[in-house]
Length: 557
Image 1 (cartoon, rainbow, N blue to C red):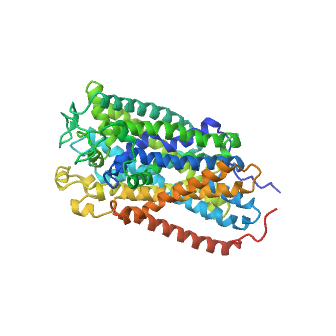
Image 2 (image 1 turned 135 degrees about the horizontal axis):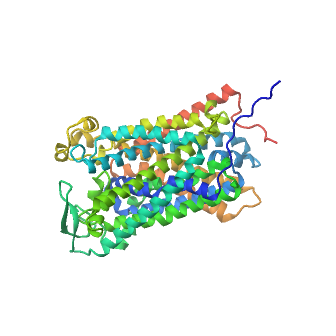
Image 3 (image 1 turned 135 degrees about the vertical axis):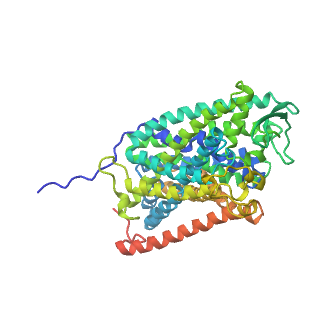
């Protein structure tokens, strides 16, 4: 009788560099400085004045969570990330082992709210980026400040499947792409940041600088710096890093976590790492330090410090790409009038970064789904690997479809809510098919929730739940372990859990305090609750169908 062929398995091909750049690709400072700044600038205006402080708070909770991930990865290397950690942590306790299957499922299910929605944010912002670039190059066909919503949605859908195909081809190719993308984007954004700071230092209060007129043309104007008024900007470097208002800071943190997620992605690649016990814990902290602490804090300081009355927080909140606008002004002032060329070169690096971050998230999300499918906690076909590429192809293509739908809708409704253009602006827009959907009167658009903000908050909700619960898992894992350390395994995880759940609370606290629109955060909360309820029902039904015990009656040998 012929031997049964062995099922394909993932291959261990990644060293420290490989696993680190896969996490760094997801954090992507080039992509997120460009794409998230507009969300932060317009969210509960003028809370964007506390943007840097909000990122600092998000970074603090990210570090606490990263340490928990790092410690857990030393104990439990392997594909599955927090999903695997939760099961092993509870199984290795004296009494709580009975809850291991529930803990594993809750963590895995919650992580899907993050990993299955996050790529949609990325593909939507790719649509916005391409729309902005196309409008810059072809102003008669598209307005760069208000690109065609239908055009952006089509780009988002196409991008979803292009990146999914790259992921489908295999992680080795993906890693090589990520190495190149990270080097390019870091160099490009640091160069812009240095120019932005130099511009601000050379243009004090009352000096002549550059701005845009109503038609988007670059003009000379007198610069002023003040927190008050219709065009707020930071009067000093200290103002950039000051929190200003605790509510503003927390609101900004609920958005800023989008910039920092990804450090945990390498823990899902344990089966593909050559030395997972050594390299994955290092990669978790290294990726967050390089791109979160060093790159982002510097870049966001520079961008906020650059703003003035000529290009203020208000102007940034009304643009499809405020960082692109800043690059145009800086380039015209300091690079011999070549502002548009400078912006387009930088935009190309952002384009590359978006490919990398979307690719990394789809790779990670698909592998978590693969781990659950292999355990029969979700439909078994998700636990199959492609025979030639050795990738979880069913999960990858499912993610592509979800990203296409959510990302397309987010791009189509990019100019709703607080981002709605004025009626006067809409009268100047080109009349073609790309503007046939997604626009209307300012009153109609303003009454609707902003699509990109809603999807972002939904993804971030899943992130906060996952990170908060992972900190709890870290406590459980080390409580009875001989390597228990009071600070690393109790103090830090407690802080991490509290900080993550505090950000969740601001989804409700913000609307109750009358801070901005209630629609986007409450919709995110409701959808998250529906996802959780569906997960509970699926878990009970699947347990009955498979004959699995919800609570373990005996500790496995």
